[in-house]
Structures are given as C-alpha cells and as structure tokens.
Image 1 (tube, helix red, strand yellow):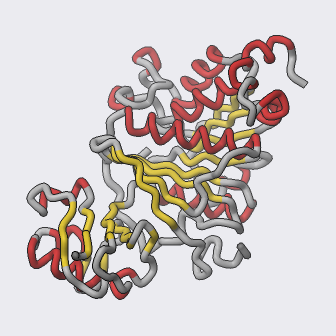
Image 2 (cartoon, chains in turn blue, green; image 1 turned 45 degrees about the horizontal axis):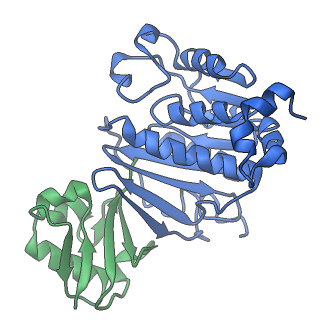
Length: 245
Length: 90
C-alpha cells in the first residue's frame, strides 16, 4: 500500500496510465542492484531513487577522484577521497528518504558476485570494464535475474536488456578478450545511456512497454542518432547457450 | 547500386571523414577488401591478421548481427554493412 505522502510524491507518474497505483506499488516492492557508482551508475541511481524503487544496492570499490567529476554526477568536490558508495548513499537519501540504499564498497569478483546480487529483482550494469560485465552477465544468467546492460565511450553509448534464458545475452557475440583502456568520455553520454537503462528497469518492474531485448541500441551523440541492431541468442554461447529460449 | 559500408566515428580518420563508403562485393569479406583497397588505414582498424577481425569490431548487415561468421556473410546491391566498435566504459 502507498502512504498518502507517497501518493502525493509520485502523483505525476501514477497519472501515467501504464503505471498507475499498482505500478507504483510494484516499484516500491522492488530491489535493484546497480553495479557501479560512476558515470552510468549516477543517472541510473538518481532516476530509480526518484521513481520510488524500494531498495537500491550500490556496489563500487572505488573512491571519488577529481577526474570523475566531469561525468559522475552523484559525486561532488566535497566528496573527493570518499568511498563512492557512501557519497552516493548521502545524495540518494537526501533525494528520497523513502528508498532504502545499501552501500557496498567491494570489487565484484567471480567468488563474491552471487552473494552481492542476492535477493535482488534486477541487476543494472554500470561497470567500466568488460571483464566485470561478463562476471555479472554469467551470474545473472545462472540466477535468472534480468540484466540491464549499458556502456559508453566518448559521445557514444549502447544499451541492451537481457532476460536470461529468453533473449540474447552480453556474451552471445563474444569473439575474445578486448584490451582494457582509459576510455575518453563526456558526462552527457552516460547521462543518455544511464537514463535509458533506468527506463528499461522501470518498464520491466512494472511490466509495461517493449523492452530492448534482442535489440542493441547504439547512440551517437555527435550525430544525434539512435541505431538499433537485431541480435540473436547464440545456442553456442558459453554463458547462456545451455538455457532454452 | 552498391553495398554501403557505414564507417564508425573512430574510423573516419582512415576514410577521409567519409561516413558511408559504397563498395562492390558478394560477401562482407569482399566488401571489406574493396574498402581497404580504397582506404588502406582501415585494415589495421578492422583486422588483427588476415581474415581475423579484431575482437572489438562488430559487423551488422542490414541492421542485424552478422556474427559469428561475419566475413562469409553474403550481401547484395543495396545492402548496408555497419562497422561498429564495442564499448566498455561506464
């Protein structure tokens, strides 16, 4: 049940026919993992907190550095040196006291990932490297937790939604390891992609709309184009190939 | 009529800024060979070695993935090939 205060707070989105009070209650009951509290994690967390998700678990091992502040809008100058998840929790609680924020300052590894995402309804990919994304992808597949992928570089970004066992996963087009780099990026790119990921999460949790499944969305901010490419579930995929769909 | 190869932003330095390069060919491989003949800098941007694409390169034909055997994928006049670079940042 929503409280009178919650009805007032979320009035404008409850007015959306596809959400309504039932949808708002679903958001309130939902538990979301956001893996990464950086460029992507910032807009994702802000919009999901504003939307009234019940619990958000932020996971990031890093501390706030000056070079983060061009894009990681959860963190401010006063947070330099602070753990990103603590900085994030402060801002998110100030935005919405009604959302439970769990702050976990850990590196995501093969051995702890299952525990880190335990009891959550969805996992949002806000990582800054491919190996960690593949760890999350495999875990999401194994635990059958929907996985919301996003990545950026420069003015460009991409997003895709993965429903384990049903749709293509992040590994379905894997050809081999990719060299890690210090990637260039301007804050507006993760802002666009993170907001798309948050939109996907809200749609999934409420059960509305058409998800970005089997469709890779590529955004080019320099040209202001959104291109969509069809992708297929790969029966030989080493992560999801054994699952039917 | 030709096959249109759409060049990724980061690769346009090798194509004199061209966004779309028309080529002739019956497979993705033949089209890429034509592209490289016109713009030799594209070879290192796409291939680790002969007939082995870089792991970071993705190829889509008519807005659908050409994975896993991208290079032998047949194409015809009027088709679109998009050369895309995988992203990893966040």
